[in-house]
Amino acid sequence: MSNEIVVGGKYKVLKDRYYTETDEWVTIENNVAKVGITDYAQKKLRDIVGVDLPQPGREVKAGEQVATVESVKAAADIYSPLSGKITEANEELITSPELINKEPYGAGWIFKLEISDPKEIEKLLNYEQYINTIKKREGL
Image 1 (cartoon, rainbow, N blue to C red):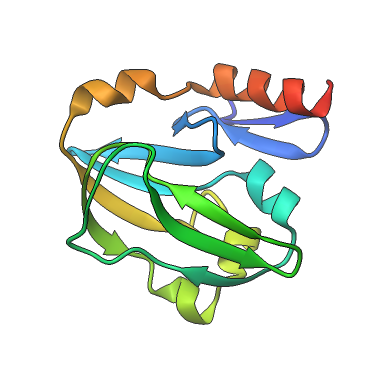
Image 2 (cartoon, rainbow, N blue to C red; image 1 turned 180 degrees about the vertical axis):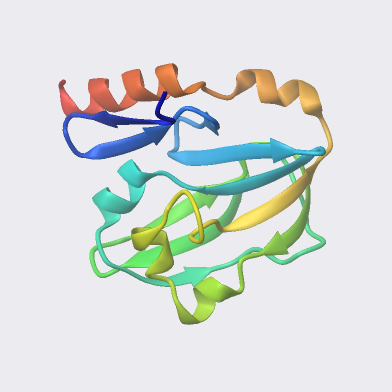
């Protein structure tokens, strides 16, 4: 069974992660969340040319703006899906921001954080809810 679903013939959604209404994806392992932007978000932004990464050690609240992704078209704020402490930022994006376009669910991850309130995970979207969000936006 494939982990990948394609919505509207062009937007990949993976079943093995959580999502936000603001197009971030989240995987969780040992109370550490890895966060990036979805395939849908990177396709809407198009060519990503820069990333303003969050500082490791910073305490953040769920929904707080923590990073910015710049494309030739626009700049988009990235929000923390959960509260916690940023433990790592993907430094590779400084020199290769296009990784977000090439591998949004892999090498294009943006930051990791240690989760301070695991109950917040229940507020995230599962892949089916996120697919419905895309369908509503795109009129599918």
